[in-house]
Every structure is written in C-alpha cells, then in structure tokens.
Image (cartoon, rainbow, N blue to C red; front, side):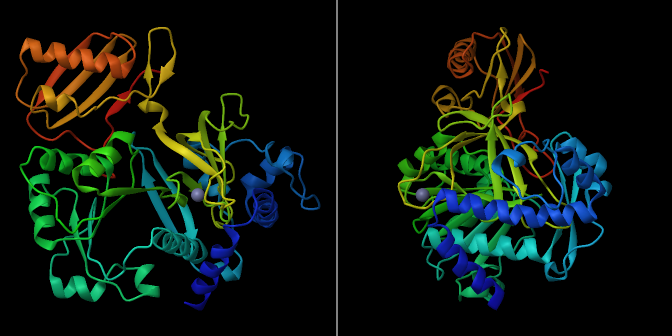
Length: 435
Ligand SMILES: [Zn+2]
C-alpha cells in the first residue's frame, strides 16, 4: 500500500515535467530494461546487438529508433525466446496473460506484480484526474464478468482496486455483456448509478433505446467510462445531447495495460510517458507530426518478464498538439482503431470510414449495423432490422456512400438477432477483408 501511495505521489509530480525531461527519464528507464533483456532474453540480446548496442552504451532517441519493431506475430511465435529467464526480485511474481484477437491468434505474455502495481497507480491517477465522487454508485457491464446484483455484496466489495485501496467507495454492481440491452436499461434504471463503465458499442445500443424513448437513462448518471473498443466521435455528442452525460475514454491493451488517459481539461489522450514510450509512426517508420495519423508502437518500460520493446500494437492514432493543461505528457488526438477497420477504395487508397452514423435510424428501425468489405468492389451491409423497402435501401445507400467516400455497390443482408462479437466481447462496425 505504501508503495502505491509513493507511486501515485511521484506520478502527481512527474506529469508536470517538461517533454524533454520526460524523454530523458524514459531513456534512462529504457536502459535498465535493455540491460536486463540483454542478459536474460535471447531474442532481445540478438535484436539489440544488431541495432548496434551493447550494455556499455547509453540509449539516445536516435539509437532507440533503430531497434526493429516487434510484431504481433513475432510475439505469438517467439514468446519463449522473448521471455526473460529471470526477473529482478523487486518485480515480484509473474502471471501469464493471454489475449486473442478477432482472427483467433492468441498472444501470451508474462506480467508481474510490478506491472500490476503500475496499472493500479495509473488507474488511480485516472480517477483523480476526473475528480470522481467515490461515494457514488458504479455500474459495470462488460464481457466475461459474473452478475453482481446484491446490494449488500455490492456495498461490501465497493468499486474494487485501485479505488478501494485508497478510499471508502460506494457500491459497484456488475452485469455481463451478454445481458440483452433492454434488460440492461431496466437494470440501470433500478440501481441508479452515477457512473457506468462499458464498451462503446454497448453504450451505443443503450443510447438507441434512450433516444427512441423506449427506456430512460438513470437520472443520476453523470459519466460513462468507455473501454476496449474504438470510440467514434459521434457517441460523445449523443451522450451529451441526451442528458449532459459525459464520456471518458481509456486507451488500454491486455498485453500492455493503460497506455493513454483522457486529459480532464482538454479531452486529448495523454500517453502515460512515465511507464511507456508511445510512438506514432508513418509508413516509412518516421514519427508523425501533430495532425498526422500513423501506427502506434509501444515500449513497456516496466515489464521485465516478457519485454515489449517497440511493440506494434496494430492500432492507429492521430498525434495531438501540446496540451493546454500544462502537463508535459504527450498527446493523441484520436484513436482510429485497427488497419482492418479501414475501407480500401478501388484506387487502392485507404481511410477510416465514419460508417454507422446514427442517421440510419432516421430511415428505419435499425437496431445494429456492420459493414464488411470483401473485395475492392463488394461491401456487405449487415443490418439487424426487418427487411427494408427499396426506398429505404436507397436512402441507406446514399448515407453509406458519404461515409465510405465512394459509391460502392452495397449488398444488404438482414439479421434478426444481434451480430456476433469477437471472443473478447468487442464489436467492430467496419471490417475489411481486403489485403
Ligand atoms: Zn492535458
């Protein structure tokens, strides 16, 4: 507990360091990691030596940028060689963490007591930044969690770590994502939460009910924290328009932890530079400037069990400007999602479509939608609704053309039941199977 308090106090200070001082701190911490990996990870010993480094040398931004990127398939196939045979005693026990992407590839990494402590301190920083009222009621709807609906139990367990390690908290209730959305709405109306934690696609489905007047949002609800999926900008506006409810988004991954948190002042995502080196790179591997979009590459400075050095997490983001809040932490303006969420136009160019505009529902009672690009000329539009008339299909087509940026011929397919999610309970509105 004392360790966590110290960590948190240090985070309180370091966020105000200048970007230059933060970078110097990162390179110093990276040197410790590199020395450890050189001694204990056969994979990284070879990789770091090939990048021209040996433990007598100090790292600079230039030498760091020469280390090849670690791909997800390398991590999947070579974890045994990447993994360290020893970890520093202060890092405690190791835990195996497995994650599977939508393609079914399983990535497995070791994490430690130390990475867990850092996760807790960053999660607590997030609560403090957003000045949550810890006496409030929290509702959680996410994949693979059991129902917790008993008020005595909910009060006893509270919000859970990290909040309960530092404070007394109000009750926390939980439901699995598999609960039908209409049931979720009834449940939320009953428990009257102040805070809700869920995925963007699930929130969108709840908003559908609220906007249609089928159900009413709890009058107590002031903030929704979103996790796990790409948050499309329209969702914030819908939430705000509904009842002044704000969304706070978190950017995390199972392999790495909490990578970026929303700034309480500007809404930009602050990269957690004390514990990660977050790079956004263009197609040539050069750092993107503010306003440019590139792939996110993350180095976890705290994981000495399975080192993740320049790990290509496969998400894309737009680099943000220096934040007006005064924190020296870097910023991302927008997290775009995966490459497979990009549409490819017949000329080969790619972009992230803003499909799934809720304007669809002004045309028909469409409960859910998903677009799949099979080939350069074939896009399947999956809709959960009663089959549309020709006029309605034409209206949806014209909205979709605008969102896709090209007059694709669309293939309509109708579903009665909810569309399938990935194993982790995530949902993607646009998936490309091109390239
Ligand atoms: Zn800020």
